Length: 444
Image (cartoon, rainbow, N blue to C red; front, top):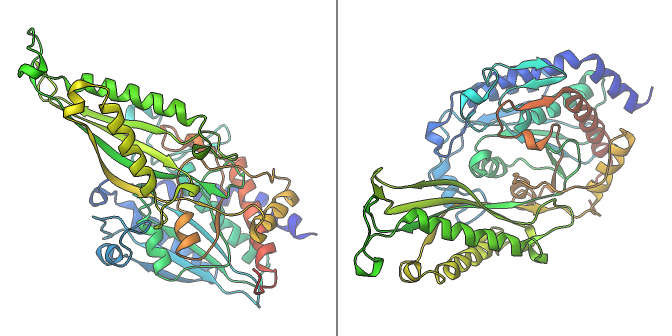
C-alpha cells in the first residue's frame, strides 16, 4: 500500500472521529471582539482541549498567556504589535513532534478565536451547538477556522497512528487574537516557534494560496453642525446646521469613485486575486437626537493592500497616506468640508505576505496536492490572514491552505463541508510527510 493509500484509508475510516473533533471545538465559545477584554470564555478551554490531544500523540507542548504590553514595547510599529491587548485567560498553544533525522521542518498553524455570532435570529440553531446535516457541520467557527485546525491536528494524528514518522520536526501552533489584528501570531513567533516552511489552514476551499491581503481599519470622522431637523435652516455659512449624514453620502460617493478607479490600477490588482484592493465602508454611526440633524458621524472603513505596497516596517503606511490624501481631495469638492475636512483615525494595520510561486516549498506542496488528486493551481486569498508574521519575523515562509468555502466565514449558519474537511486532512498529512522527509540543506 502506498503512502497516499495508507493516509486516505485512515482518514476515511476515521471520518466520524474527525467530525467529532470539529464539533467538540465548535462548542467552545472562543469569541474575540474588537475589545479583547470582552472576549468569550472559550479560548482557554479550546486550547486546553487541543493541548491534551497533542500530548496524547507524544508531542511536547507549551501553553502560555502572552504579555501584551511587553510585546507592544518590543515590536512597536511592527506587524501584530497592537495596543490595548490583554491575554488573561486567552493563551496561545504550541507543540512539537520531533523528527527522526535531519529532515525539513514544517509548522501547521491556525487561530482558534472566532468572531461573534451576530444577530441570533439569523441562525437556524444555537451557533455553538454544532449541527450535522446534508454533509455539512454548522456552527460558528466551523469554517473560520476551527475546521482548518481540526484538519491539521488529525493530519498529525494520521501520521502518528500509522507510524509514518518523518525525519523533520512537525510544529503545531494555535493562536488567539487573529480576528482583531494578529498579536497572537506575533506572540507565537516571539516565543520561538518556527520551521523551514509553514501552512496556515485558513479556509481556501482546499486551494493553495501563497498570498493574502493586508488590511487597514480606520474611522472617518465627520463633523457637521446640529440643528432642528423639521425647520427651514439658515445657510451653513450664516450659522445654520450642516447635516453630517448628508456629508456621509458625499464622502461615500467619493469612495465609490475611488474604488472604480482602483479596479483598473495595476498597483491595486494581483493576478491571483479575484478582486482589486478596495475601500469598504463596514460600519456607520451618526446623530444625537431624532429631531436634530446629525452634528457628527463616523464611517468605519476596511482598506486592503498588497505585499507590493508594504512600507519599510512591513505594514500599510504608504496606503494610509494615500487614502488620507484621497479623502482630503474628496473634501475639497464640498464648500463646507473644504473648510471642515473629515479625517481618518486609523486603529488597525494587519500585514500581508506573498511566498514566491517558484519556491521549493510551494512546488513541493503542489506536487503533494497533485498526488492527492487536488487542483494544485495557485489562487489568492482575498481576505487577511496571519501568514505575514511567521513569514517575515519568524523566517517561516507560510502559505494558506485549508478546508471550507471562505465565503461562509463570519456569516450566520456558517457551515463546513465534511468532504472538504476530510480531503484537507489527507492533503495535509501527505504534504507534511513528503516535506519533512526531504533532506534539509543550505539551499532550503
